[in-house]
Length: 371
Ligand SMILES: Nc1ncnc2c1ncn2[C@@H]1O[C@H](COP(=O)(O)OP(=O)(O)OP(=O)(O)O)[C@@H](O)[C@H]1O
Ligand SMILES: [Mg+2]
Image (cartoon, rainbow, N blue to C red; front, top):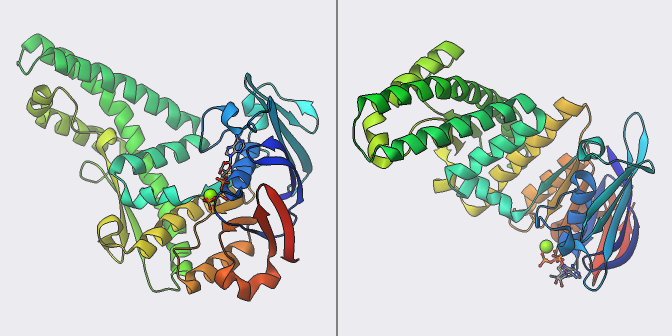
């Protein structure tokens, strides 16, 4: 899909912006604090009604104003649709083709975006919880059943932990009988979660590995491994293994007052050439790996919705070497509409004729060159 144009009214540092973006790659060059991230944020908000930077609509409304508006025209394979959002301090309103949509679920999905920012490096560098959250978010987006399983699991887990804390480390037969009841429910949902995550990680790996190879110029191999209780993982063996692990950990769990095994403690290993990327990867390698994971998301979205989303790359080129930057922009631009921000054109100068280049300065955007 293609974002043909975007218009902003009193959004952050943009007073009034009307921009035609009907090119495969739109590049925005600007110094710090000029509005580059604000613009990509606006596109993401147009797609999702939510910002990755703030939970409050108010933060996005220009200081001194009462409301902000973001609108745009999206071209898809089968149709063209105008999207429009109004943000006020009291909330937001959304229109598709001029018709108000009161339910968010009737609005979201007309424009799909994948946003990559420098903070996404945490996928590689951060602790296991960052990667678990990534899995939960991504799978949740395409599978309501998964979200339900996860909610049930977390609810039962909280109840089990509550019981563990009540014991204050004592072993009391009545309490252990109740634990067994909770454990039975817990392993049911845990098994489903592990299986779904495992399947997702396998698909993600298939795409991410290919993309990573492209960006690194074939020099590196990315692999992913979901880590949980020992394999094999079929519905039955998984529940059995989880049951055994819970039993084996019971004394520890009672002492600690928390559950020390299960999907809430699982990990996704991210390896470059067989070594953990978080520990051994260089800054550039880590960035490439994080990028590959995010770009793999693009393929997963295409599998689900049948069209590529729009890709937003905020300030992520500077830490890639020149070869990786060019690989990335040309590989993406040929299939996905891409919006890139950077403080300078740098090596992209050499392929600038394929790009539409703009300059951003104090909330104003001017066309510089390109198609
Ligand atoms: N609600 C708002 N109203 C007006 N201006 C705002 C608002 N929110 C943020 N800004 C301004 O937007 C500027 C930041 O813009 P943005 O984050 O897009 O910068 P950037 O071009 O991405 O810079 P960098 O290169 O440092 O990432 C801030 O300096 C701030 O003054
Ligand atoms: Mg920025």
